[in-house]
Length: 101
Image (cartoon, rainbow, N blue to C red; front, side, top):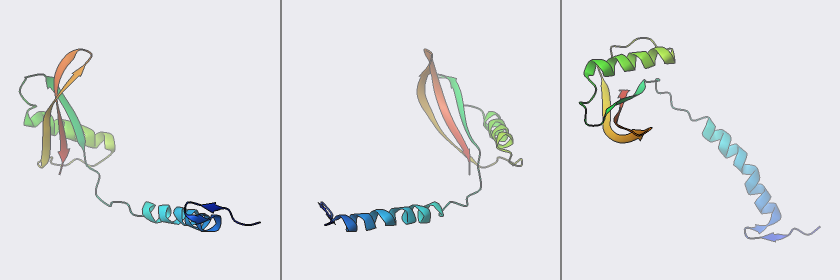
């Protein structure tokens, strides 16, 4: 049987390229970040209300660490992003994202 021509050349060359794909996927799968798991929380307040207090953020981070099965941490270093204006069920809210660093 004569190989059929494709856009990439003959069929056997295309088959060779496809055979290489699983090896590339396996190589990429072996590269996994070794970063320690961190807490990440969403905090919502009524639109225009003050941002969440430091104590509320720290408590939410500690609660997330417990849910993740992580040891308690001092929670001294975290970052906050927001407010992001959202609406849920007709309720206008400001959403903040806080995470450990």
